[in-house]
Image (cartoon, rainbow, N blue to C red; front, top):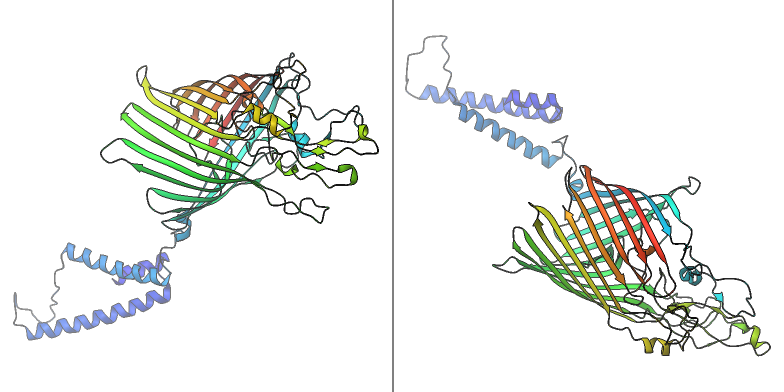
Amino acid sequence: MVKLIRGLIETGALKKDVGEALLAQAQTEAMAAAQQARQVAAAAPAAGPKLEPGDVRVPYISASVRDQIRDEVKGEIMAQAKSEGWAAPNETPEWTKRIRIEGDMRVRGESRFYSGRNTDSLIDWRSLNAGSAYDINKNSNPIQLPPLLNAQQDRANQMRVRARLGVIADVSESVQAGVRLATGSDDSPVSTTQTLGGGMSKKNIWLDQAWITYRFNDMVSVTGGRMGNPFYSTDMLFSSDLNLDGVAAKFSKPLANTDISLFGTLGIIPLEYSSDNNPSRSQSKMSSQTKWLLGAQVGADWKLNPENKLRGALAYYDFKNIEGRVSSSCQLYAGADGCDTDWSRPAFMQKGNTLMLLRNIALDPSGPASTPMPQYVGLASKFQLLDINARWDTRVAGGYGLRLDGNYIRNLAYDQAEMFRRANGNIVNNFNGSGGTTVTEFQSGANAYMLQATFGRPDMSVRGDWNVLAGYKRIEPDALPDGYNDSTFHQGGTNARGYYLGANYMVDKNTYVGGRWFATRSVYGPPVSIDTLQLELNTRF
């Protein structure tokens, strides 16, 4: 025991003053034990060989007893050391075991190729809405064009990067929290990709996620804050980079004695709150307005056998209050600070949805024909989506994986006649190009679908894994809101159709190279054809 204690002191596992106290205690106990042994030996009858003067009796202790004594002493010392906080110098603090860091990085080269037959008058409605409104009166604005998107000049070899870094904490058995930062050229909700260049300027970092999850049991959990998309969906509806704000409840339950597991999600997502101080230069403020996404989804996973698995999900998404509203009579010529439905223009949009003028601008009696008419635009259609997803994983061609994905979306709220009534006829896009702007020339639709096949290992994990994929999408203009889906296919939004091809190869642990080719064009209206090539290196940690 003495040697053990001295060894612990020499290695630093035991403080010197504590060790010396234990040595003194051990020596005292040893002396007491020896004294007691002498007394017992004197009282006991002699046994064994007779001791001659000067002989010493040494009792035998077996190896198992010695090991037991050593373990007991060590256990007592370590228990005392842990309680007093001076043991285990190489052990990390307890809180570090409940926190983990994760992230990923991507370096991409991207080229975009536009057809020379594309229209040169593709209006950038997002920029128009973000500005101080566009005057549509040719008498007061005879020359100035609205902001226009590039649709004819190629953009080759753009270098882009994406970096995301997150921290996840297991606060308790029931509570988990996470924070993630990400790059991004702007505050777009559908992309965290940062374009390089810009005179070597530093790049932006955004708060990408911030959430808390409470797990009631193994089946039910609730998450609040800014979270990853809680719904099972494809990027035809929600971009893979999209995060949702709000509250989402999720459940999952395996069915007893089957290979079927049920899952579901309920989400309450605030999309936008109107400004508290609008109009800013008026004593009379507008009432509070909120745009919402209410979502519900149910689905099932079914393992038919070791080589075949099915997944299906049915969802309903109700986008409340996001459609445009025509204002009451708005006397901008008399100094009115905006109009009372300016809030109904989308906070973010890409392109494709049918749009309507929002402002009912009163004419200046002193010069009606030259009255400036600065306008914003809003969504002409309402959106209540039925979303059906299906996936089949199987094995073919000697054991290679094959995954088939399908997605169909229908906007149940699409009503062409109602759109024109609510807009007072002031629809501004999605016509057939003849020059007319009536219902007869109008072209839109409420359906979208996607098919994709992935061959190889759809979920790559180790060096040497690979896959190839091919898919097709068709998204009619008002099948879904154009602000939330993949920003690469036709440069984002709706009114798009086309195919895409891709391939990926794992070059090392958690690192793969990949390439994708997109060939897309508009479904209706003026011709817009866009081809996109992406080559990239991805890693995660």
